[in-house]
Amino acid sequence: MKIFTTDQIKKIDRATIENEGVTSLQLIERVAEGVTCEVVSMLTASSRIAIFAGPGNNGADALASARMLYEQGYQPEVFLFNIGGDKLGEDCAACRDRLLEVAPDADFTEVVKQFNRPHLSPNHIVIDGLFGTGLREALSGGFRELVKYIDDSRARVISIDIPSGLFGDWNPNAVHRNMMHADLTLAIQFPHLSFFMAENAEVVGRWKTLDIGLSQAEIRKTTAPFYLVERTDVRKLMRRRPEFCSKADFGSAMLIAGSYGMMGAAVMAARSALRAGAGKVSVFSPRCGYEIMQTAVPESMFIAANSDIHITGIRLPYAYNAIGIGPGIGTADATVDALEQFLQDRKEPVVLDADALNCIARRQSLLHRIPVLSVLTPHAGEFDRIFGQQPSSEARLVKAIEVARYHNILIVLKGRYTTIIRPDGRLYFNSSGNPAMATPGSGDVLTGVITALMAQGYRPEVAALCGVYIHGLAGDMAAETEGQYGVTAGDIAANVGRAIKSVLN
Image 1 (cartoon, rainbow, N blue to C red):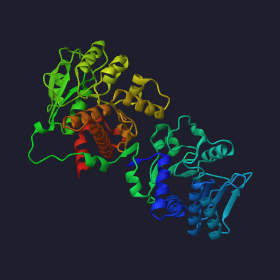
Image 2 (image 1 turned 90 degrees about the vertical axis):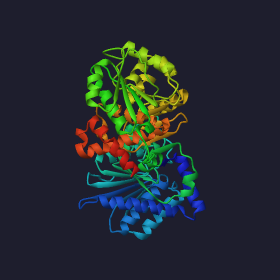
Image 3 (image 1 turned 120 degrees about the vertical axis):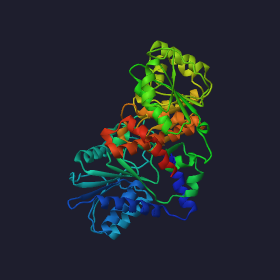
Image 4 (image 1 turned 180 degrees about the vertical axis):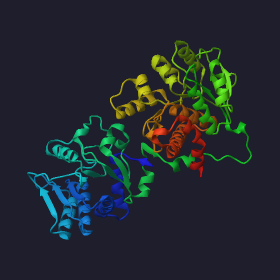
């Protein structure tokens, strides 16, 4: 799914009106139908409804929703903020007039000067239609106090398109206590970029999109800078296996992983690489890992390093189609030296994860030795150790865009919406996965999957995108069986093959 900027969405909206014979009021009606359905589905015998409408299009959506609720026999309280008496947009004024025409006895207040706050309780459902994506500065004064009052009431809040006070794209100086905190955000046609930032989760709540039939032709021709990766996207990229094939057709993957006490990381990476379809999987590790690997993952081959405890040099006996390095290798000085020499000699892209990233954090000069289009898979802590402490997930994403372009690498920034950042600045947010995957070894599984896909001939950017989705889907399958508390990395690795099957079918 394309994720557009707020300016692009406005252009698509205008194109729909100009080219497809749809009026702005008809689009408002479509929004209101979706909002009304959601509100009605949430109502209980004790529920009350309060609607807060601003002077713009967001307010028009709220007022049209109020009218539809009255038409269905409900009695919402409606507050329209028209401070000064001449601030209403044309569509907002039209929706107000139609509401009062349909429901002349409506509990309706048009706030021109002073505002007497209604009593709100946890039994209330609040429709937030104060401000949408047209907002250009943070809420202040009376509006700031109003959203705080609504939040403190513990009423359930449904925000139309976006919670009031939150910007659709970037929020570099956000003060979340001055924004509406929604339980449900009903985004119009598309989610907004800000929905994918961890710090905004408390404001956005759960989100859904309302399809209001914006121009598909305009959507197709508009190039988006951001994407939400879904199952259909991955299905188009994954290849089915031919009837006549052998393991030699699916590449050889090398995993440089493990050290004394951390061989489990190598086990998880190898198991997932096999489940992801690599024709051959080898593990290069200190000699201490021999019995563990041969017992735990007998399908893989073991290549012993010239050391017993940790890797002190990397000399591979063959050329491999793809190499992943990092899970469990530790950060001993000799290992950092070995990684530096390996990167200096390597020309093809590699997958760098876990302790390989921690080694880079210890020796920043290694950044300049990373082969072009290599895949780095840091979580927030690993990213910050390399590129500097970031105050928020948004700031971290902005920094990732900068360094991916500068070093010409791919960054897989792991989290709720794991994000693939390409050197051209495009962002791909992953839609699969769940909190159960916050478990030791989950990242090692991801390394194995991406390395295996690269070994099979997928380009690094495709392997990263598909690998992240498959990894998340495997985590979803594991959670269905084990629950969100019980999932281990082994469960995720065991479901990788099923996840690929699910995508292809």
